[in-house]
Image (cartoon, rainbow, N blue to C red; front, side, top):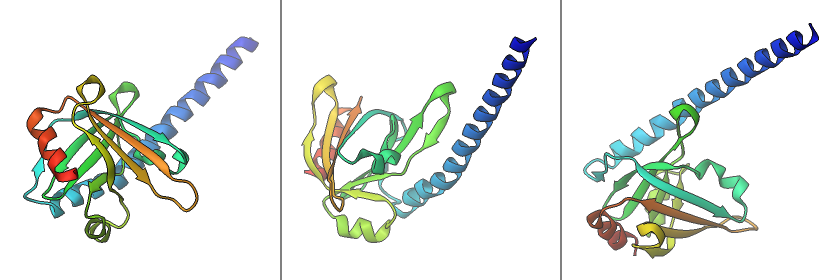
Length: 170
């Protein structure tokens, strides 16, 4: 009889946890999706890649501050002077969780004024064909005390897109 009570309590707590995590993903997507659509409309006329690109993100340094930048797929918007990564984290049960965009550009003042709440980064190192034939981007995120190294690998880009991104970010 005692085992039945323990099983019932565990089942109830598991149901509550799943419900709360689903609600948190819903709220996050509700807040981030309008930001991504605003970026896409403000940058009308730019090249938007329709496919999701597999990506790998690693942070070294004060990474807890920037955990909202971690994603495993992204959509790419290429403008005249910037590359914008609209991150999507696909987790368990193929649930999509939208992540704040990363704007990679040499013209940080313009994009910081256009999108003040987004992460605008100047890449410090670029490699078109790194390990696993990926497009590699390294940037340093400046903070008050400790800088954070951001490494982005975009997998499966074709040569035209890689060359265009290299020309913009170099």
